[in-house]
Image (cartoon, rainbow, N blue to C red; front, side):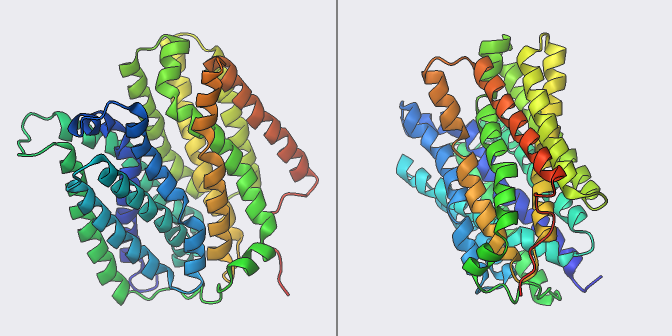
Length: 403
């Protein structure tokens, strides 16, 4: 193996854990932040979590442009610096607007990181793209499971004695570990023999024009399904309470279980995608998600709901590594970073509206059951169309040749 790449990959797995951590950590801290700044408006407090995800979406296409001029590992290093600074800033936040700034910047760090890091990981191990991206994604998903648990301990553990609000401990810990990990990444990257696969990727627009079929396919595959999933998981606890008579504490445990089920999904899907054609796997995942979501709406009994929740968690989290591998394995060196950034930025904008759409339906008195069944039917109908296109040979499976 090329010198230093394994150590560099290890540092990146630590970094992806840390950049994904804040995206999930803010939600369980909202009540504590409201109390700390004496805020009663749920809209003002909810904006904190919104800004994290908005921050994650905004830099993706600009980062793609930046990657046409700056080496991938330099951008990864920069995201570590931004995360360290943003977490430190939030630790000492003195008002709600200052928390807004910190949350937005931590989101920016995460979005820019994924655009730079995923192509770099695929280029570090070109003969096992699925395995590498699967491991990298597993580290990210572990953060989604660990963040609520860590926040819960920081906020509630009586044996932690601090002379300030406990929520500040979370950001202080992120800042310290981000600084250490970023420093380690810098030290390892200086000594590692890095790939030059992206050296010819110097034109964002050219990448879009050349590889638009793959970009569009990626947005269709994940954008609309992510739109559905964004609405489902953000309202999942409330859905279980209202439609299934499952107490909210139990619902929160089930939501944690959904994210936990995604940990093996990243690992196993990554390995699977190295061995089988990519598009059929993606179509099976989409069909499975639609079927399980529809089944959940008619399920009765706690055991059935638990089983379906875990199955949904595994299946939907299989889609994310499958999509990254599908694109990054197919895109050529000269378009990988730019085309991937365009796909990711567009896809994130589509799916980020899922919660607003579901919330609006609820305001219009649409029941959760009707909304979830409509979502399941939407994904199911999409699968039927995509299967027909695949059978007809109209779905792209490889990059377009450029003369």
